[in-house]
Length: 110
Image (cartoon, rainbow, N blue to C red):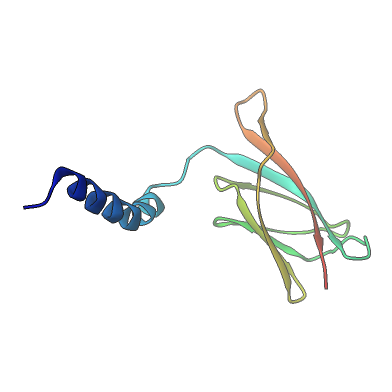
């Protein structure tokens, strides 16, 4: 027979193994996020044609390195010419319609 304290330790240990999988299986927030920004090269010039992805949403930067995409995920990935960068939207705000909006500036280094 296990003591109550030992039982608590075993349950806590199992919870730390199972919790990440449980949280990963939960559906993502359905709140819409409009993510926009600009992608620059290390020398400060705009990167046209860079791919920006957040969840299933994707966008390609224009000639000035700018992009806009609509997603429900605050995690994004930028890739261009073999370089890539991942980030997490930290500063987002709600507009009058209740939509979350965020702007990011990304510099891809060689």
